[in-house]
Structure formats: structure tokens, C-alpha cells
Image (cartoon, rainbow, N blue to C red; front, side):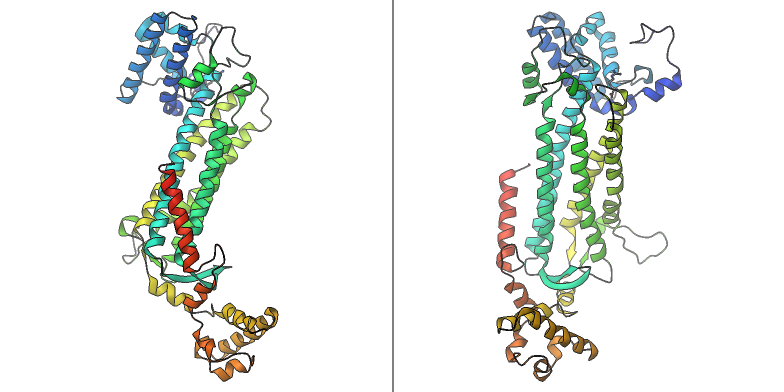
Length: 460
Ligand code: ARG
């Protein structure tokens, strides 16, 4: 007779075991599961629910099982359904029937809930670490290229000159918000469900505060029915991950574009690019492309868990087992994408000549000319029209703005003077000195702020 089948007259079909089992994927919860069981055994002994000696046997058994798993000696068997049953069955093999006392005042429903919360808490720490690593790479490239100008874009059309550092630091801000989202998620994940039993609580004098302290939870779940059926924390992690992956995909898209011959703004290090099987000259930005592409599965996983949870009645339902694979995949995908993107950004080479040339072309200084007329008293809308006509004329003459004669300028506004030629990409950038703007002074302030954030937070 298999475990948990005392009320049945026969074993489950093999197909059913395979269909319902989760051991193939939930084995990666083993560390949380064992930590939770050790805390539970200690609590049971402290409360006089089991003897100290039995608790000691149980704890020693669990520690040696953890070692077996870590040394790859543990055999995971499909018929044992999940990580909880697998560890319990092995504990029974090791210490005999005393193992059965561990499940006093506990259900797999609160057990799996605590395992998942511990897993997500750890994942949040790693994710914030990964985000910090990427932010550090961004700051590194921004600092190393402080004077580099490039065209800023709207509608993917060249708009106004900006500092490359300014553009990159926009990503620092996005990842800073991501850190905030994961920290918020941590606050709601950090609530202990253990001690809720199957759904209704347990008829033993347990100490849930002790469990929380042992397992480093700062709060204890206040409703046992909610505690076993809540997976908001999984949804929150996955939605924060979806936003972070969206940010990564925007960066990846820009780096893909920028490394094309058409832009030529950056070149990926050879270690972060791959070749083509047929075209020997190709150097493809596959890392950036995959970072862009992998956002799809992370969105998919979020949609998956939202759909699993939709209309799910209280309390525990087996549907909840479907929370795991998507979450694991999202954590793995996000952590890997953060790391590889940080490496790619850290090692890419910027081509300042290309970016500066692009910033000077395409009439990017037109707004500066309008502001010039505005400063001389012309209402901005009139200045805008005059410069619009001037640009149309220059395009028609196939000339850049600084190739036009002063008389050309004057035919559009008598306010134009010799000093119009002193408007350059550099003066344009320096002029945008409003808070958060692209002037070197403002960008230096943004860099300083970024450095303070990274220094103060250390790994977090
Ligand atoms: N493998 C299950 C899950 O992931 C563990 C909880 C099982 N509980 C139950 N009542 N069958 O949700």
C-alpha cells in the first residue's frame, strides 16, 4: 500500500500518478521543505506535543536527507507524488515510525504554502541582487562615456541631442522602480502560513510565533483559510518580473538596433555575440535578441497563474499545484536575463563618433533655433513656424542648418544674427539644465544619485 491510500482499495493508475504528481518539478523546494519541517519538529517538542528525543531524531534524519539530496544520492520516485511525501517517506525509512509524528498539527496545504513563500522570498533577494548588478553596469558605461552625445529619439526619429549617459540612466530609473516592486512584494510574501493545518487550524497548542522566528518570517498569517489558499505572492512576483522583463526587452531592443550597421552606436563584445552558420561576416546580437524574446514566456507564466487562480473556490484546491512551473521558469528566466544583460552592457563598446555625428544630423538642433528666436522675444509658436519653414528650405537645398547663409536665416526671421552659428550639439545639451534634463550638470547629479543608491543598498 502506497502512502496516503489507506481509504482506497487499490493503487492509483500509473497515468494518474504521473498526471497528479509534482515531484518532477517541486523537488527544487527541498531546502525550504526541510527547513520548515525542522522548525515544525522543534516547535512540537517545545510545546510538549512530541518528545525532545523524537524531535531530535526527526531533525537529524531531515539534515541527513538534505545532504543526500545535495550529494545527488536521493532517489525521487513518481509514486511518492511530491517533495513533501518523498522526504517523509525517506525519513520513515531512516528513523522508523517516529517519522510519522512530524506531520502532527500540519497538513501539506500549509506545508506547501510555507515552502513556496520561502522560495519566493529567496528569489526576491536574488532578483534584487541581479537588478543591482545591471544598474551597476549601466552606471559604469554612463560614467565611462560621460561626454558622449547622441540623438535622443521620439517616434524613433531623431529629435534632440542628449547625453548617452542620460539615455542609459533612464534604464537605471526603470530598474530602480523594479527593485521597489520586488521589495513591496516581499512585504506581502513575508507572512507565515504554517500552523494553518489543512484549512481550519489545528487542535494542538502550537506556537506560530516561534515558527515565524525560526523561519525568518516577520508576520504570521491571520486567517487559516486564506493562508492555505493564497497565491497572491506568486502573482505579485510574476507581475513584477513581467514589468522588469519588459524593461529588459526595451533595453535589449535598443542595443540590437544600436549595434546594427545603420546605427553603429555600440559594438557588442565578441563574448556576447554569435556568428551565422552561412554568412561569415555576420556578428549577431543574439544575447540582446533573446533577452527581448524571453519576455514572452514571462508574460505567459503570469497569464497562466492569473488564470489558475481565477474563480478558484476556497480553500486549498489541487489546481494550486500549477503555481510552480511557471514561477520557477520566471525566476530562472529573469535572473539569467539580468545577469547576461549586465555582462553585455559592461563589455559593449560605444562609438562616440557615430553617436555624435548622428546627433548633429537630421536637423536635431531645430528646437534650439526656435528657442533662440523665443529668447529674442518671438512667441514660441511663431518661432516654431519660422524654423519649420527654414528646415523645409534647408531640406530642399540639401543643406545642413549650419551650411545656410545668414541671409537665408534672415529670410525666415529678421531676429536671426551671427550668433546663431554658435548653436551646436554641445550648447544644445548644456542648455537643457532643468532638473532631470540632459545637461552635463544634471546628468552628473543623476549619476551621483545612482551611486548613492548603489552604495547605500550594497547587495540590495
Ligand atoms: N503538491 C501539492 C501542491 O503543490 C502539495 C499539496 C498537496 N495537498 C493536497 N491536499 N493534495 O499543491
